[in-house]
Length: 424
Image (cartoon, rainbow, N blue to C red):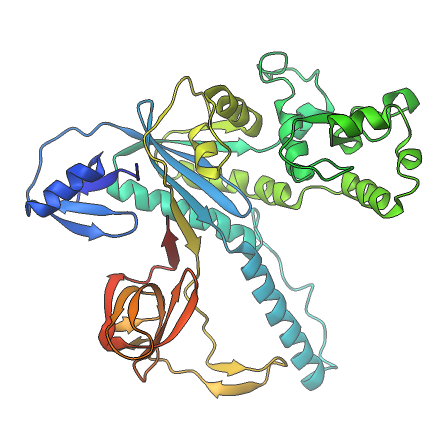
């Protein structure tokens, strides 16, 4: 079953979401109209005096993808996966910096340095990290406008590194309970890409393996741990890793290097977790938190597959879950274009003019349209984001790629530009 449909009354107040079949019946009977396509929302033609059942929005923040789930009692009625564009922002800023430095060196090479004149405010985050916080918060506020959200649950700590290094730390209720060891296992699975460090096999039961055996002075610190399949673990035994991989120097160097490297994605999540938590508290709703180990424990106990939106559903204290949706809404952040006044070549020199006019033939680049072409070489039906031109010849981005040269006469709007693309 797909996601439930969000419902608004005629005054725009959120009501309890309904099943897709009920929504189709209301639309067919003329009792409601389509308010928004993504996420699909209908608005009733009359005011309703009802007390909607409270909902909880659950978040599993990630460096690349954030899982979103909406819980109604013990039922998951909506799921979504929000893909961030932090890496694109980082690359764009790097390119801009390189072009500016090159231009500065060519034209003002003797200008006095000003790098000590800048100060950053407390709590400053890099733009690629701030984007993750603002995008997640924006979607929380969107869902609050179309659903009766009364609480928020967030996975605050992905990896409890302090507990890993010091298992005897006090004040952690689950340290000697059912969750013992889950933080370390989840950390290693992510760090070693869910494959054996020695033979790269995947989708088999893994064992935690000491790179430097304890019998030879190795420790239990996470920097000395890796993943190994049963065969490789037995084959290595208590050998020193340098002796075990003496004939494979490249693999040895890779393992030793990766063991010391921190997780880049985990660092990004740890850098933004409190900023996101503080932003969520400003919504006025109560915010509860959980850890990554707790999320995995709940998912394994409930027998759910690994995915971002189901991880979000398992955040926090979960006794039982009934998942009523199987197709999460896939949301990809695309941005709103650039503010360049002209196009440049690879060296930063202007080569073409960019018009300030953004709307052409009633469409704007980024709109989601449906085009039914009845004549010419591009006969067919296309649905996707549109790239507009003043000439009226548009490009439409579909799953298989970009279809160029579609006339605006064949296009009809589905969803106005909001900086995201959607799929199921």
